[in-house]
Length: 183
Image (cartoon, rainbow, N blue to C red; front, top):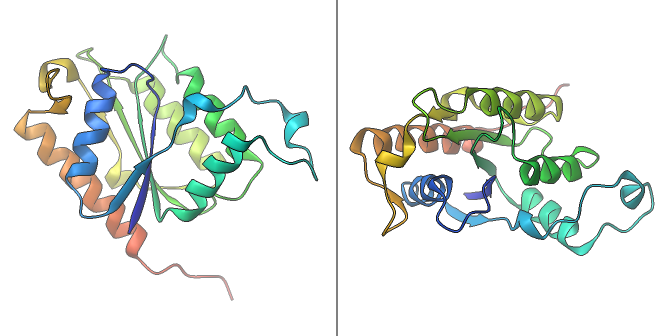
């Protein structure tokens, strides 16, 4: 089982990075994080039929295609999805790597109300892209700052860790389920 993780935060000491590291540590699956910071700005002319995608785009597409499941962890910026994450998804729209791929969305915010706007935007974008969003694997984590240890860069709150464990279990179960093709 291989899980590819996309982190919507580029901050070195991001609480979303802590969520991502902690979530991946709770599963036996092999995991890797994609470097979405290296992607150029999406420009459809660079992705036209017959065009060779830029190297970072080709690497992202290969990583997504090679994964059994995708885990997206993201903050919310100004009631929306961070630009770097939206840019990565835009590069995947015209390709088929996310098609029917089991995908989880974890949003995390220091706010007591969470990152509900970014959470719903991400889920809608992924549904439009025909990813298989696994509802039981999606979470909007509130007041995350108090639940992490900045020194270790991990989540320390037992209830949040249990919630992440359940989310990752749902994602890996969905990824391990046989797919059916229409006859």
